[in-house]
Length: 216
Image 1 (cartoon, rainbow, N blue to C red):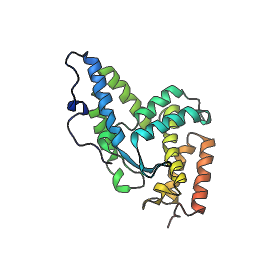
Image 2: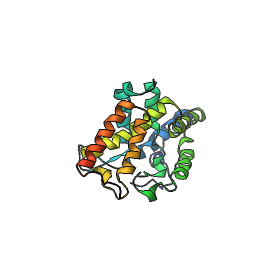
Image 3: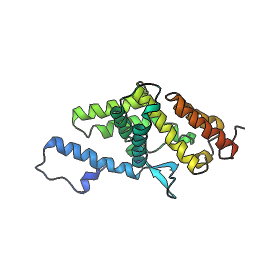
Image 4: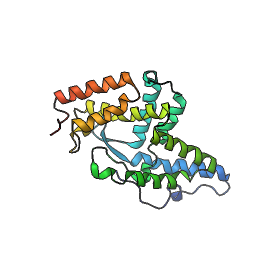
């Protein structure tokens, strides 16, 4: 589903009581606006139902994966910090929309859209929390820490697993061929030798089964 272009905040539909503490008001306003994440559909199909996953489901799944698979990170990571990164990483898509990696047109201005969305969304929070959440988002985007690199790997692995469970999934999109799929695999390899070998097997077997197209 595309980004929300409604200038109103979710909370505007049912304003909070006037006598609330201002800090709590800002925090609850942000939490209410984050509800929009549940409406942003990704390209990836669910494995357990015949529909696409939404961004909130994706973020939850990454948090679970970080908790369970952290032992396979090639670098030691702070699991709690990594879970914060994945909870925050797609919030900007509330306003920027999802940008399917195998759709070249969708990623043309992705950076600009997401930067503008970050500025609009995170500043709803009290200044100290706005700075903290923005720093988490920037850290994930830059992949400059072991935690961010592992979270990026999970962000690659999760849709690959869904594609496998759907006998192709987004690997069937026009822009997906062996080379573009292997580019996503490389993001897993960069942070986890063990999980990288797993994704390598998924890609090899996906090619053999005809779920991934060979390059022209």
